[in-house]
Structure formats: structure tokens, C-alpha cells
Amino acid sequence: MICLLSPAHLVALSAFQLFALLLISLPAWAPLPLILFVLISVISPFFPGSSYYLPVISSGRKGNKAVALTFDDGPDPKVTPRLLQLLARHELKATFFVTGVNAERYPDLIRAILAHGHSLGNHSFSHSPFLMLKGSQTLQREVEAAQTLFRQFGVVPLAFRPPVGITAPHLWRVLQSLGMFCVNFSCRNGDMGNRRIRNLAAKLLGNVRPGDIVLLHDVAPPKGDADYLIAEFEAFLQGLKAKNIEVQPLAQLIGKEIMETGNADIGPNAIKQFYDGFAASYDDEQFSSNVSLSRRTELKLFTARLPEFFQGADRVLEIGAGTGIFTTTIARHCREVDAVDISGKMLALLDEKCRAEGITNIRTRVGDVEIIELDGSYNVVCAFSALAYLKDLPAFFRKLAPHVQPGGTLYFLTARSSLFRFFTQIGNAMRQGLWLKSHSRREIAAMLTAAGFEVVSVESHLLKCVISGGMLLEVVARKPQGTKDASK
Image (tube, rainbow, N blue to C red; front, side, top):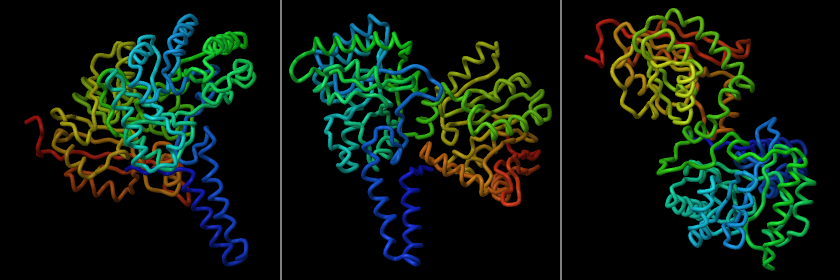
């Protein structure tokens, strides 16, 4: 379920709560929280790194020692070709946040940018500095028109940079509808679109830090001093080398793809968008961040069940297989695994693991498991923290039932409704824009029974205490003998 919950919503809630409390005790001070809320809401969008209204990427992942180069507002025939030559000499890749109007005006330069191996980002169609003050329909048209134009060059940008780096309350919904995310910057020199380029390199080198996303412009200065601009770009690149700061492609720095190539069908699927962009860093994040406790608990429970459910199984279906944290282990204990996931990039990493480890009995399939046709029947169907993303879990269980062989097992771990889980659901909504569904033990048992499964056990795990019955449900169900098999 789409849930675009941002810090702005939490600030608003807090402001109104304080207003109500002060209205009772100190009426004269009651308007103050609301005034502060309005001031914060007006000022925050003008800070490029602010995620007040939506998630904004403005620097590299934690611990990254490199920087990324980004160029806005182009392309420009007086600057862009020479800049491409400069980058090629230094063997560097950059991201060009291009306006639709300039892409339409200079198509050969767009092709040259792509031919040199650089990435394209969307910088709106017309680059109006007041775009974020206009309505959501205008913003939708601006971003979508640029996307349509870029498709003519065989690419679909995923990254959007708002004009002047200013965000707005309605931007997140527009980007979600187009399968995009927002990228700003953390290092700039105040060049005013190359109107002020004197000592540009020295200013940047005085401010740049490892992990920065550097903002530059590939447009000709109003006074026509393109030679000076290119010389400053050269001095900046040389200065980075002297400071032992590496330059990485933006996608590598932030761990998210900047664009899709070919006739990509991105579609407005928020889950696919998030995990496609997150695939490269997914495994590290699962075991080195605040989600690691949940993931390690799942692995422990799965390992204990491995001999019982998977050893010697014929066909296994894993829903939401991702990069294969569980899949490769399952494959070593059974004849065949069908691994389904909505993210093609996650499954591509699973395929790489299979080739590296010599595993040949995993078949990956990209698609939404609620929509795609399932293939034949399975001895075991499993899922690990994937079912919380499904829109209609009871309907999915009914769809799944004919594809589980009589006597077959359904084993999954999923979110349990609890106090602690509620706070993680809020955190996920602020991160992904999605409200992941949690369920009680009784709800899960009722769904499975209605779909024709026999419930074997529904057990709670993780952070069980007096005020919370746990955050994770481990569920085992079986298909009764003598019921319909989809393979018959």
C-alpha cells in the first residue's frame, strides 16, 4: 500500500498536539508550534540535502571515500563536447542532469554523452526555477515530458534533480508514479549556473569531502568564457587527484542505478523501483544495518527448519527470493527451486551467485507473484519477509493453494502486528513510501484455513516482551491429502 509518510507529517502531528496542550494550559503560546511548523515547511525545501518532504539522496553511502561528478542544465554545444573530451582524458564517468528542452534542441550531444558511457538524469523539461511552486499536474507534465523524450535515445532516467535543488510536498508522489527517485548534491560553489565561475576550482576544492555529490553546470557562461570554464574543470579534477579523492560514477557512489537502458519498462511499481535501485548494496545492508536483527533471526529459524522441509524436496517455490540469501542454501538440499521476485536486478545478482558457486538448479523468474501465472505444483512454498508487500494476502493464498502438492508445505516468515512493529512500519513508510502489512496470529490462521490449508503452527519471535508479543511470525501450513493438484 502506497504510504508517502515524510518527516513533514510527523512534524505536523507534533505541532498540532502541542497546540492542543498549550491551548488548555497556556493559550497565548498555543499558536507558536503551528507557526514553527509553517516556518520549517517553508524553509526546508531550500536545503538540497533536506528529506523533509520526501527521501532525497544528496551524498554517497556511509563510508564511501570517493565523490561523484554531476552536471546540470545542459547539454550545450560550446561546453559539453569539450567537457566530454576532458572526462575521457581522465577516464572518468559523470551524470548529466539534462533538461528536456536542451535534449530536444541538441540530440547529437545526448547521443555523445551516452556514447561516452555517462549517465543521464531528468532535470525537468523546461527548467523553471519556480517549478516546485506550481501544482502537481504541472510538475507531473514537466517530469513526464522529459522522460518521454529521453526514451527516444533508448534510456529511461530513474534519478530526478529538481531545478535549483528545491523540493516540494507533491514531488514524491509524482516521482513514485514514474518509478523515479530524487538526487540532489552536497558540494557546490554557488556558480549561479556558470554566471560566477571565477576561481571555481579553488572554491570547490576547499569544500569537497569524500562522499560528496558535486554539482557543476555544462552550460556556457553568459560572457562566453568557455575556455576559462574548461580550464577550471581541469584544475578541479587535478586537485581531486592531489587530495587523493577518487571520482566514481554516481550509481556506484549511492548504490542505485541512475538510468535504465534499452526499451526499459519501468512502470510505476514502487517496490520494483526501490529494490532495483537498492540491489547492489542489499546484502551488505541486510547484515550491517538496523534490519540485521530481523534478518539474522529469520536465518536462525530457517536453518532449524531446513532438514525438515527442504532436504530431499522435489520442487520448491521461493517468493521474494531477492539476491538469494536463502535460495542458494535451499537449492543445495532439493532438486529444483523456482525463485520469483519483482526486481530483475535482485535476481540478476542471484544468477551471478549461482554461476560463481556452480549451482544449476535455480530458475529465476521476474514478476509480481500476485499477477504472474504459477508453473505447475510444488512440494514446498516459502517466503522470508516478502508477504508483507502483497496487496491482497488472502487472495494470494487462494491462488497459491492449487499449486501446492497434497501433503506439501507452506513455510513463511512475515511481519507480526505489535507495538514495536508499528514503529518499524512508520520507518519503512518514510524510507520506501510503502506501508508494509503486518498480521496477527489469528488473522494468518484464518486466511490459510479459508484458502484450504491446514495450519500446523503460527509462532511469534523477535523482541517478545510484556508490551509486545514479538515482531515476526513463523508460519507452517500443509496442503491436505486428497485435494486438487495444479499439475494434474
